[in-house]
Amino acid sequence: MQLEYFLLLAAALFCIGIYGLITSRNAVRVLMSIELMLNAVNLNLAGFSNYLDPANIRGQVFTVFVITVAAAEAAVGLAIVLAIYRNRNTIDMEQFNLLKW
Amino acid sequence: MNLAEGVQIVSFGILGLMMIGTALGVVLLPKIVHSAFLLAGVFVSISGLYILLNADFVAAAQILVYVGAVSVLILFAIMLVNKQEEYAELPGRKIRKIATAVVCFGLFALLGTMVLATPWSLDTTSIAVEDTTVALGEHFFSDYLLPFELASVLLLMAMVGAIILARRDLIPESLVSKDTVSTKLTLPERPRELASLSSDRDK
Image 1: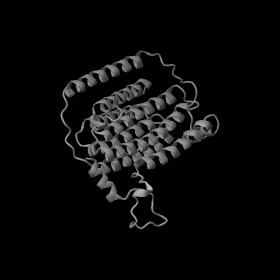
Image 2: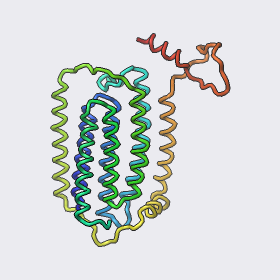
Image 3: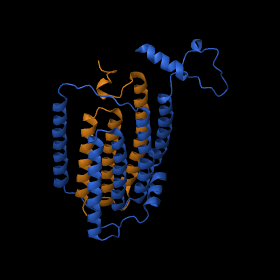
Image 4: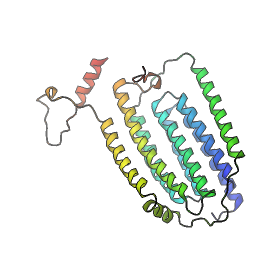
């Protein structure tokens, strides 16, 4: 087993997340893509922690922090989606132009 | 990790294929409910990869937080905004999708060459930590104490913010109708009928 395998897997997951983030029109799916990207970063951190710093696992500490921030982000993001849905009666990303010039 | 090398590689392959497949399903499937369940599959396979990386506490936290909380939260959000809407066709959307796919492939190629070309300074001499939970706890309460406390404050702020964002609108005092029974436990927010009336009027 090598570090490169995990890094390549995380890179693939990150790119899938970016694709979903840009192309999906459902606001909930956009949040799911953000979760995918955060998980790819977590996989990177855990890999570095295991292969480059096994004596004092600082990468895993950062992984736990990223998990915390991701949970907070998911809660607030879904609340925002809910509020926008109540006001605009749609969840189409193309019609969320409240802050667009 | 005291598994044989072959077992590790086979389980890595299975978990990796599962992760990429379910992630593609999350992004590409037309029904949002299916993608939500596949997202739980992505989280489970990533937790298996954490176990391969000797990160057992993080794997358990991943199962608890992501599979237990975030997936359920997303399912609840899907149920609350369950609208079967036909998206209006936009001009140039296909070109945008193709361009995004090209950019993502390019980014993956760039990251892949970077990963393969970098000479990683692998640490093979020092012995791995036996009990990662104890080691993580020591980190949290010694050199990462301030970020740990800030994370708890952040979680509190996110909880309050989510409640404030998701509740219904407040109404001014003058509009409160007298016939609504107000007890000590009544929240100062717009009743459901009034809210639906005003949203009908806005249309």
